[in-house]
Figure 1 (cartoon, rainbow, N blue to C red):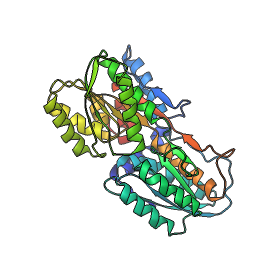
Figure 2 (cartoon, rainbow, N blue to C red; figure 1 turned 180 degrees about the vertical axis):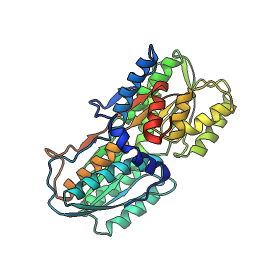
Figure 3 (cartoon, rainbow, N blue to C red; figure 1 turned 30 degrees about the horizontal axis):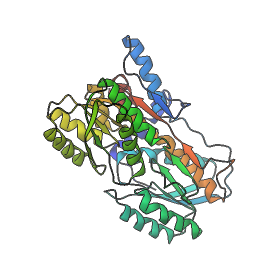
Figure 4 (cartoon, helix red, strand yellow; figure 1 turned 135 degrees about the horizontal axis):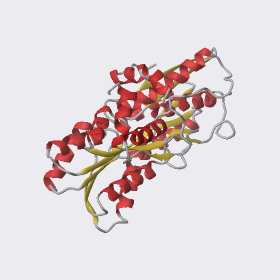
Length: 364
């Protein structure tokens, strides 16, 4: 089991209200409402994009588990509210299985700071225990993927989940999460470039060194910017998924480049750090970034952040538990589930922020 943080408890308390307003989206990447012709139109557009961003309405599929008890081990990059949201989806799947007479227990642990070395130690320790499935959100694909191969070769059932899969060709049995991080980075950056009129000076805050999701989004950002000769990348920095470090790095970038026009933020922490620094410096740099941090949503609502790509963490958690059960029963990817279960990302804009804050954090 895992322990709720303050924000996670609030998410759970608001779940019943959210169920009235959320529905499953049909595409892997949706676009929110940047502008609307009227207040009523803005509300309708916001409702649509927020509904597509987070889907709380899940039911277990028809698969009948072969056992009445399972024990899983999950580890992820770092302790952070993003993974609290994933855990809420896991808890809902756990609850629904219990209603069917199936008890699921799981460890859900991570370090305070992202570290491939720490993740290696955790995985090796988990391999010594009798878990039905080991799941990992990969901290560094180059370092962790070979270890996952070794665990699978030793007979362990290993899956990946969240936003970071292992390297191509890894023997892990399945992945649940974001399969389009490169496109997310490209789409957010395209929105930034359009906002800037396809000219200006831009910085990129990546996240953790070697983390597949962060690196892929940054690569998508760089490739998009490369199409526009009048846009220049003036800095690329790694903030290690730390709000404080992102703030300090943005301060330094602004000191070196006071006329900075924009920042691409590739994880959930760095839009917050960047927005703090931008606000403090009275800069007009445009920020685009990822996910649903409460402070980031407030900055979005105020117009400090231009847009956010929100991943459906709840669905990731729910689907991870379902597929872990099937893997534990000896099933492989195929008819019952795909090798990669894709979850959506929705870009939301200022008109979407108030409703998202209300649904996730109770703010009006």
